[in-house]
Length: 231
Image (cartoon, rainbow, N blue to C red):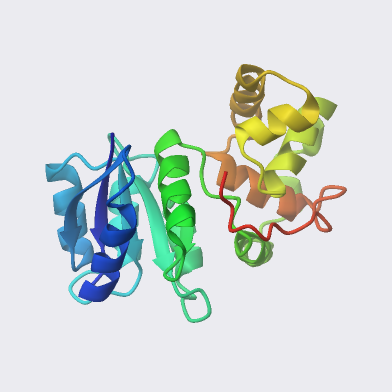
């Protein structure tokens, strides 16, 4: 059972997400929070697996809370999904830097919400929703002041590993990558572990950002998903 905490200062948003999730047999909403400070405390107290985190909340913002819960240096990090309206939440980039697994739009449909939670709980990161392409592209652009020669070289990866990185950038799940490349899903997971280790990346999301920073062949013109990222 995936234990979820919903952190948002708007009761209607929390209630809506709870309503969406009530029929998911493998997901349980274990608590709610109206501020970042409360979210950090309750996430620990309730042993949450995933936190749906708003960015702008009175009494403690979501970025600080995300850093306290999800950054890789934290003992027993908890997966955080940033909940955003996207068009106005410039702070989402700071949230990604703080360790967020990814993000979700507040008007996401029930299937997309459940998919995002399951992906975060698996440690996959959220790279499938159609809007992710825009965010990752912009996030990579904002990181460009770091010289390319300071980034890990694509030459560290084999041709098969580069194929998998391109598939990640297209928003594919592990199973979809396995199907496309005619691999066992266990083999895909092994490749992904090797890729993140070789590049020194925290997770899949950082790996995709790296791919955009490097402007790898085929990355910029990969098709953008239109199905909301559901498996």
